[in-house]
Image (cartoon, rainbow, N blue to C red; front, side, top):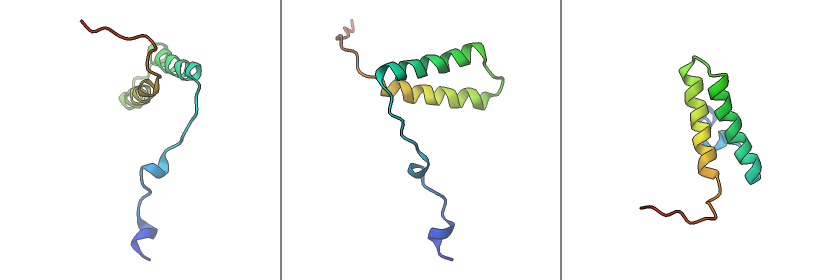
Length: 71
């Protein structure tokens, strides 16, 4: 048996791609936020995972069409 047969799968191999419209992306964010607010679990690891997914979803949100002014 060589190393390739015993090696753990890479992180890339464990990822999924989901194609969402802007509206679907916003809905997914809102749904996870509502889940945390209303049905929040006591398990810290669940909160951590949901926050990580939310961060990824927010990073995928389209840039605002309106310019933002920073004073």
